[in-house]
Each structure stands twice: as structure tokens, then as C-alpha cells.
Image (cartoon, rainbow, N blue to C red):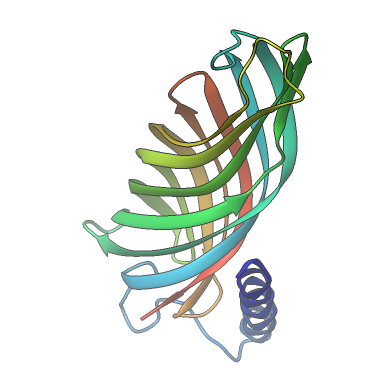
Amino acid sequence: MKVSVVAACAVLALSATDAYAQSANGSAGDASADGVSPFDGFKIGGTVDYRRHEGKFDAPTTKQRVDKQEGGFGYRGFVGVDKVIANFVVAGAEAGIGNGGRDLKATGAAGRYSLDPQWSWDVSGRLGVTPSSGVMVYGRAGYAWMRTHEKLVDVAVDQSVLDRRRTRDGVLWGVGAEFAVTHHAALRTEFNQTNFSHGLKAARVQIGGALRF
């Protein structure tokens, strides 16, 4: 699934770049020439990202302190809808699911602890303004969940191994910009962050695109 999402983003980016070049040569015309905003309607899309996971908590069972940051790559697919509610204001809702990132690890006398950030999903709303017909800047707020897999191995004699999955949740916020390259395709870049429960934080820098219909 990861390969297919990345491939879809690449195809979308290439097609959008070609459309943008045509527009620059005068063959595509204004993105809103028919009077309908290119940021209005249902959409599907995907992003690739660089994400940093930060953990500051005591590992379960051992109380071994975890204070680590790890960066890695990930991906996300999403569906949503946007609506122009004024001449230059856009309100929308979005739901997404993704995966990626590196394990957080800590080693101590009790054993080797690791937290694997696995699937994450989110729902959010966004509010944007369009300083020009083909550009939108926006803020995002919502809620996110992350499924994690925790392990404790190579334990001391008086310790038990740990192998459990847990879902953490938290508030998501972000800012971004979207660029219409045709009336049905847009590119986007976004930074967002989620402060999950139990001392886990995730920050992502994303690039990708959406198809609107």
C-alpha cells in the first residue's frame, strides 16, 4: 500500500506540473474562469512526509525513562470536502489514514524497550482564504489516533517481557497551502503536529496533492 500511495502522489504531481506548464503558456486559462472555485467540492488525495516522533515517558512495567526523538518518512491518504462560504473563504472537513516513522528505543538495566509507531488516522476541519484564484492558505484543527506496538526484550531475571499494542489519541493542528493547477487537481504542502496521550508527540512536513470532483 505504501508503494501505491507514493506512486499515486508522483503521478498526480507530474500531471499537475504538466497542467501548470500549459496554463503558463496560456492554454489552460484561469482556474476559476467558469466562476466556480477550484477549491470547492469533494476530493481524494495523498501525501508523503517527513515525520518526527518524540517520546517523553516512563516505559511500562519497568519505569525506565524514554526521552527520544526519531525522524523518518511516511505517507497518508485522505478524503474530504471543501465549500466556498464567501468570495475568498473556504471551509472544509477531511479524514485520513497513514503509516510511517522510526521506532523509539531505550536501553537500561531492565531490558531493551521499543515503541513502533504504526497506523495513524485522523479527522479534522480546515479554514482557508484564497489570496488569488488558484492559491489557498489554511489552518487545520482536529483529532488523531495512533496505533503503537511496544516491546521489552532482553529483560532482567526479575522482569517480564512486554509485547502489547495500544492506541494513543490527541489534538491535531496544522497550517498549509494548496495550489490549484487545473480545475480538478491541486498540489499542497502542510506542517501539522499531534500531541498524543502518554507522552508521545508527532510532527509532520507533508507534500502531495488532491483530485477534486
